[in-house]
Length: 340
Image (cartoon, rainbow, N blue to C red):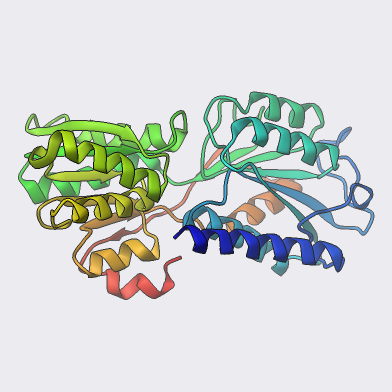
């Protein structure tokens, strides 16, 4: 798995670097002299080649969901290459680096920023810097502390509370309201981890026999999810009847840990998750995962459509919510080939 992710990182880097060096209409590393500042105007200025330069601050690129999201933004930029150039940064899972990345984008004089925040708190300096430079910011897939319409234009993403609620709703029906649940939570301090937990808890609290017997962060990582699950199995063992993972990567890690412990995931221990990645749908088909609630990573068209509306000075909702699907044994095979 690690080598596959490393290969994806290298591939993305090569693509971005090559496009920049060939002066392609889609740029992964825009030069400072190729754009002018949007400061002094509520609308972004154009670069010297007549295009609008958009910066995308990605929080990390260490899992299939993040890679799919970045690829979607890049692909949409290619489709609109007559109008836009794109600059992509990777914070490598560090909030401090993401703040620095946004400041660098501002210094490069980009005209708009798509920001996928690593944490809810901690991005205030970045948002403030963009605000002072009058560069519009659009939050992609995660929220950050601030006032919509003032500190950023809009949030584009899924309803994470609803994702947690839907996972819990299925589990309650499947278990008749009785389960010993291990919760594998996402990145501490992120809006998505907070909301997926809240939605799940709000639903199961109506059923006193639905008990969280352990809750630990796996930081949205397959390897961390496996390690955390191994430790929990040692302490809880047969008390565990369900794993609720905040994303598929942790769920798949938990599956490996359960199998190593001689348990049968999907049968001895139910596995419910969120994201809808290809490996999760394969696990559902194989009977090792029970359900996953989709969290769509394909933000490219929506992000650029929303920016276009902003440039036309149209009214934009401060929160734009994507519709997510629900995958189980009944439809996983139907959608597995189109999954990321």
